[in-house]
Length: 157
Image (cartoon, rainbow, N blue to C red; front, side):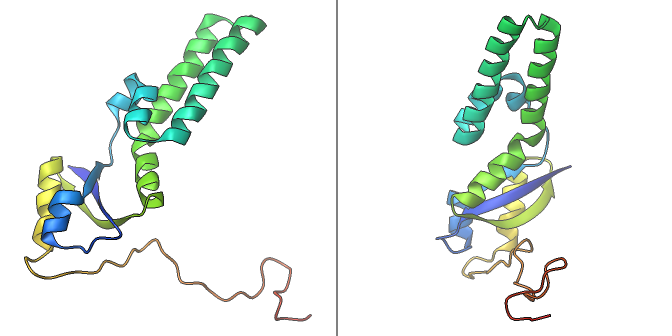
């Protein structure tokens, strides 16, 4: 079974209709598309900054290897590591990008397919009821007391 994260734009209420139409279901598994064609996969998923960084690293590797006389095997190995990194971390980057764009995590489910994960999310939401979801990743501010060895602005030694 695969773990799926279900995201919904924060401007929408978590209702059955909104979840069915506007949600993004992201699986937590290896991305084969991100591995075989990483730059294209990043662009198709609108991960512009990640695509730009990957492109710059690949171009730097290509030009640097040719000018410094680096053996082709080393260049190939570094390219393979970059492909593996996008395949392993690409979906996590996609989740972070969705949160930056204003999506919020609605639920996390375990299912066999994307459709089954969406149906499990729909089952959690009743027909006419609007639910709120408290994100466990958000923290309430703690005491602004001592940071390390330095006292805060309100405290005098």
